[in-house]
Length: 510
Image (tube, rainbow, N blue to C red; front, side, top):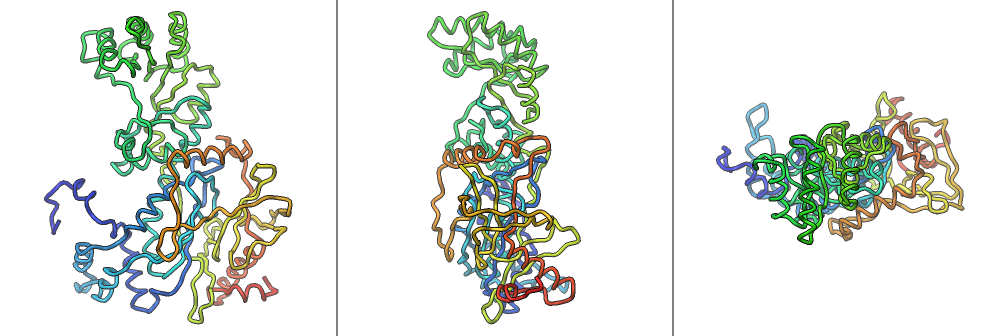
């Protein structure tokens, strides 16, 4: 592609390098780092989020496998470099120096990356990913990392909420037609499966990820035939082992009666009526009436499938009302994260080595405490008692994790807690890359899915409420908190916007 879009954008998009999948300012900063001799300075960045989506009490981490693939395959090809060379500044001169473009053409990632495994339950301000290495590489990872982690974590969380609402019922994800493009649909299908959906209607996702595929037929199938009975008979003939009839094209309960007639014909041929699907109207009322009709006719094993703008709140309410639905088809509200369409994940510099090789801790200050980032080289340890998770501790790996441990709420210093030696604990961030080489074996998708469900079972049910969930205990280790306060004081009193680990340990004023 040179200068004009002469071919299908879709065809080109999926046959190109992803080296330029970044924001423009990442490139301008990278150029500046190289010019000022900072490109190879060792730095540490963390990706975290500030608020749970959907006003919930937990979030499911997802997207790591795609990040692994991105880092493994990263490069800028000749056409990428050629494109960057065409960019001009306000003086109409090339924006990027030849030396910078040459540097980029040879660059491969040599960073260390730690991350929480996919399917992990996570909380605000906890690092989901830690990147440590040359400053220029850490900076260039910001945008793609956020792109690859934010959206799938959002959708996995939404799906987990629907799984909690549905209990043991089956959940079919079928949001392909309303998802945000090809990437959005595939990412959503994979993330929805991690969160707890049982299957997808997305056939390409089924092929690529091994997710079970499922579906029924649409209203157009019924409308093609002269009457509903003909339509059901034809579908039973075409798909005798997958006959779920959509019964609301004309009159829902009459449609159920016709489905029963065809189901009786199927039985005579040795097949079963798998289900009927409701897609409009009062789904709870119709499901109760449909169940009675089916049971009275001897079709107790036939499932009732429902769809139509469902989400976790509607599913919960319908189950409270006594619905007989046992298979839930969820689409738009799931794959778009409709009521909260973005996770507010961010990526912040937290430490950089000075010329003497000593770590200088950094933070981003704000008038809003919730937007102040945490300094240090961070890890999260999850504490448990008798198998139930009770608290998470954000600590600095250079300062260590004392035992017993005193933690402070990062947003309210008056709230603190002691975690005794009797508690079990485990670090959440695990090694993914060492000096650019992958040291992590990505688990299978069913394993990731099971991890999410197993983790949720180990949290108190109060954090899983949809309305006013309990706030799970997440605190900063006291020494790290003191270091943060000292750095904030430095900045606000005009001192250098940095603090060293050693200085923070010696400063009695912290």
